[in-house]
Each structure stands twice: as C-alpha cells, then as structure tokens.
Length: 347
Image 1 (cartoon, rainbow, N blue to C red):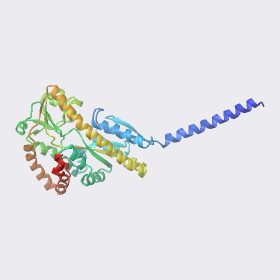
Image 2 (cartoon, one colour; image 1 turned 90 degrees about the horizontal axis):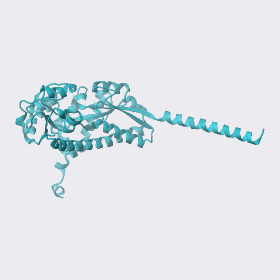
Image 3 (cartoon, rainbow, N blue to C red; image 1 turned 90 degrees about the vertical axis):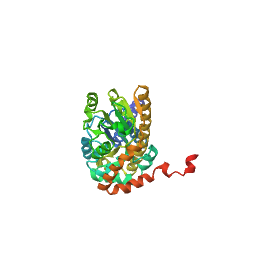
Image 4 (cartoon, rainbow, N blue to C red; image 1 turned 60 degrees about the horizontal axis):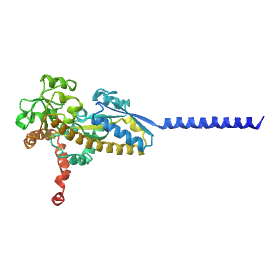
C-alpha cells in the first residue's frame, strides 16, 4: 500500500473521529440547554412583552445560553385562569398574572391596590422590595402553589379615560365606569362617585362605543395600544391606584434549576421588573402628551377629595383585614420624600 493511500486513510479516520466528537459535543450542548416558555396574555406592545424580552435577554446572556427562553404573547393561554393551571402543570414555565385575579386565591394581595397607597414611582420602587411585599409574595406562593418572583405595575389605575371630561370629583356622578369586577375596585370607584358597570374586557370597545359604559380605569397609554382611544376622548390623570401584576414561575421548572440558577433568576426578574416599571411611566407620560396633540381633553383633578373619599374604603377593608393597618404604616414610612431630610430636599 502506497504512502499516499495510508495517509488518506489516516486523514479520513481523523476526520471521522473529529466529526463524531463535534457531533457529540453539539448534542451534549443542546441537551444541556434548558429551554423554557414565558407566556403572557397581552399583545406585543404591552409592558408584559417588554418584561419577557428583558428577562429573556438577561437570563440567556448571564447563563451563556444554558437557559433559553421562548416568548408567547397572548397565544399559549387566553386567560389568567388558564395560565395558572398551565404553570402548575409545567406546560409553561413563566407567566404574568394580575393581582386582581390572584385575589381569588389570596385575598390579602389586594392590599397593594389600595387607593393612593404609593405616592410616586420612587416610593413604589422602594416599597415593592420591602419586607411587607416579600411576605405577601411568599403567601401568594403558598396560596397558589406557584413561586412568585416579584410584582410590577400595569396600566390600570394611572387615570380615568372617558367619553366626557372629568375635572373634579363632582364630574364622576352619573359616569358608568368599567373596571375589573373585584370587590375592592368596586368599593374604590363607588366611593369616588362612579356607577360601576360590569363589562367583559373583550366587549369594552363596543360598550364604550354604544354608551353602555362611559369610562374605564386604564392609563392613557393603554387606550392607545388597545385602540380604545378611538372611542374615548378625555383623560383624567389621578394616579388613584397602582394595580399589580405578578411574575410567576412553575414549581416544576424551579426544581430543575440549581441553587445558583435560582438566585440568578430572582436577580434577573428584579432587574427586568425595574426596567419595565420605568418604561411604563415613560410611555404613560408620552401618551398623555400625544393625547393632548391629538385634541383630547387631559385634566388633572385635585386629588384631595378623592383621597378623602377613599378613607371609608380604608376603614372598611382595615376592619376585615386586621394586618393591613400595620402593612400600610410600614409602606408609608418608606416614602423617600416623606423620609428625606428637608435640608437635603432643598439642594
């Protein structure tokens, strides 16, 4: 056998062995990648999508691809009820769920949606990382059988969108407002003077169009992304509530993660939430300015009468939920403006 033939055989063997090693390595790398699903029930313009995209980017970068995330906006689940069951079963790994819906499992989550509980974005950002919120999230986990990673604000409660201007609390009389059919929400808006009118979310557009309802409690930005701007023309900026959504992970998924990965998921969740909250406040301000340019009426009613009206809501819910007074006092203490030395505020 010639040297040339021997060389070719050795070369072919080398290539074959190298190919097997490469293929095995590729398969091993693929097998080592943990592929997870992140779903939410809104469209790609909603804050939920930004949260999901930010979480995906950060977790994939920090794990160097060991964890990959696929995002499913409004496709895997069509309702929050269904999403809860999907997370429990492990069909999906991460999902966002509104605190209003979680109230059906854990009533005390509604504390976070008390009117005027938070005074500013800065106050909210400090308070959501407090021991009170950590306790609430731990109890949400026990009540739902899931793992709650954190809370973030959504569109609800930033203001009132209506078919006629609201310049003061007196203007709420006779206005039929659609809000989530949650007992606390109903108490709040009835205290403000609205006539709370049940309307399915999917029928809100036509209900506003036909006059079945005259208003909703979504922020200005949400009116644009859900095309409700076509049937409302007035926005009252009240910041009456900071309604919450909760980022949750399946216990079955959690069990697959190492302790290091679990800590990383918690860190990344917090970073993604901070960015999402900041983004929402910026988009809301931009939407308000856009609404003004579009010829809509934008008002800034005096909130003092609304806060006064809310006192009976506090009295009712503190009586039935004894822990809430203590939680409320703890949250109020965390307001940076209230705690900041006056000398520092002048600088």
